[in-house]
Length: 383
Image 1: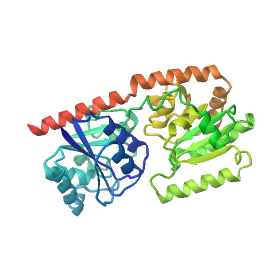
Image 2: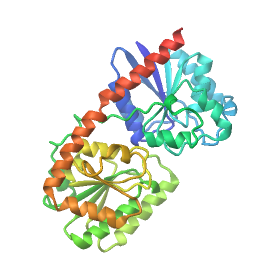
Image 3: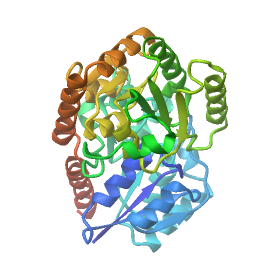
Image 4: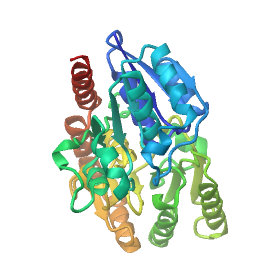
């Protein structure tokens, strides 16, 4: 059995952390034992212990995008990481961006291979970092948009050296036969009211302000429409907290939205949010991947999404939803209104969306791709 240590500086449960959980839980029991390293406990560690296995807490501060790898390799916490790798007899280390310079140094001290998964399009290596990034044994990007943003133009390393492995969606958890009436009843939303949902953590780039403007435009045409937003400031950032407070104040002060728009916080039953909705909206200014779009598609729901970044790779225009420029409030409203007014179109797009998820974005495909990469790294390291 091979032991893998997954390192993350995030203890909350955003899209990347959900992907990490999904991957670790899907690797073959008996073939892999998956450990998690975090700087503190939180939602991620709680669920990991329940579903996956051991969690190790070592307080540390994540690297900034301006890190100098040689300097970070000298931090005392690197020796603590290396000691953990040796004590737990870890065979392979996996890192996110903010742990990378420390995990890379610790893995080298312990004589282990390591892999870097790139979740964010905004991680663009600085000139003094490029030698370090070229030397990583294996880097995986979660979308073409992420890969291309990271490599830049012209790319600082060949694109073929950086494979894209899309996150997988659990189509048994997210499926069209869920009962959305229960959530509507819980929130006091009439069962026959047109309902538009958004699922996103609070961060300005996620476009909650755009969603509010779209909702206001829809209400002028369809007064019975209702709106729900699931998500919270899952990472506890001060700027994100201020943005959350601002958005909620704006909704409370808006006569058109005060009784029609509900912010329902983090939901560990997010599949019921999709089930209750008629349409899912992704209003992000830029989205690295857009996991909520795929989860909603797996639930048989049509999507109206911004067209910048990952959604252009996952949502098929006119087939599983509509892609709109994030600055086009009227375009968002028209697309949502079209779907709310045409049940057959919603049904056809929902059916096509689920088929697309099962064909191209399955957990099986993601897990098999990672397993091949893990096995290749382990084999090379043993030679």
